[in-house]
Each structure stands twice: as C-alpha cells, then as structure tokens.
Image (cartoon, rainbow, N blue to C red):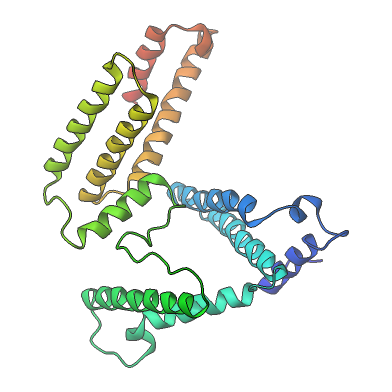
Length: 273
C-alpha cells in the first residue's frame, strides 16, 4: 500500500489495521476511551509546533491529529453508528449553517453581527438536539448556561470558558485588580489550611483549585491564554534548568551532587541570559 494525498487511503489503512486476524494487535484492542488521551496529546503537539514556528513539524502533527479522527470514525463505523463521511458531512453542514453571511443571502456582515448570529444559531442547535433526544427517548441534555462547556478539556481552559459564559449574564468582575484581590484572598485561605493543626489534603486541594481558578480569571481579564502562558513558563523553566546542568557539568558535577545554593546562583545567572 502506497502513501497518497487522498484521505481515502488513510481510511483504508486504518481499516486494514483494525481488521481482525490480519490487522495490528495493538490497534485492534483500542477503544474510544483508550484512544482519547492520544487525541488530546496530538492536539497539544499541534499547538507546540505552532508555538515553535516549525511548519514542517506542524504538517506532520496535523497528520497525527487527523489519524485520531480517522481512528475514532473507524471504531464508530465498526459499531454501526457513523463513519468518516458522516463526520465530514456533519462539520460541513455546521459550518454552512453557522456562516449564513458567507453561504446564504445575508448581507452587511460585521464581526459583531457574525458573533450575534453565531450565538443564536448555536442556541437553535442546542434546542434541536434536546428535541432529538426527547424524540429518541433519551434523557434530556442539561440546559444550564454552563452545561455545554466540555468537562474533558484542560482545567485552565475550561475555567476560562466557564467564566466567559457566566460573564455573558453579568456574573463577572469589571476590573482585573478585583481579581488580583480575589487571588490574594484565596492564597490566604490555603495558607490557613496549611497551618491547620490537622491539615486536610482534601481541603488543601479545594483551596488550591480556587487559587488556580482565580488565576485563570485574571488571565481572561488580561486577554491572555493561561495555557499558552504556562507553556511558555514551562519552556523557560526547562531552558534555565538546562543551563544549570551545563554549568555544573563544566565543574564535573550533576544537579544531584550540587547544593541548592549552587543551583540557585546559576539560576540567577540563567535569568540574565
């Protein structure tokens, strides 16, 4: 089987990998649940390639992400639920439906009007989904304002999305400094839990979650993606720690052999580079 620019070849390859007796044992034993973590990981690999500005890697990582879609679609086809074509049809229908200013006879599109139309159309889709569930005898979907914010996304990203949704009905601060005050309040509360006579790991976890939620809120008010900010800091930490390793290596030492004071001095040096 040869490579191809046609997505149908990728679908054929996945079908071959999932064919009993002749396919790949690893691919055959996978389920939606076991593949889901890989799907998330591949999405992060795409984001990493973009952040690094490596378009060659981006092409490869997008292929890996597409493979995840094909994998899930193949398992769904085997279960008789839907196939890859249905996935494509569903997203094309959604994009056409949500862009009447491009694909229908609506004129005078502005960013504000497009956003309003997008929100209205999503609300209509939500109502239609609820009606479909009722007609099929399925339990009604939750209808609260925040219920459609997916629980599977990264915590900081979900925190921001929950806050944005709540903000649409006025449940929000209008000043970033008020959020900073909230962060200080939450830090005080976790300090109380740390100093408690009988510290509770569960309460400490809850208070730490409150701190992180407030930090995500500050990022939102500053129009900063908290996940991107943290990825940047993670890379900065990795780079500076690598400098510590190099400088210690010049002395014939490893970090495990050095004192904290020695490493801290090199860390300060790394910050100035």
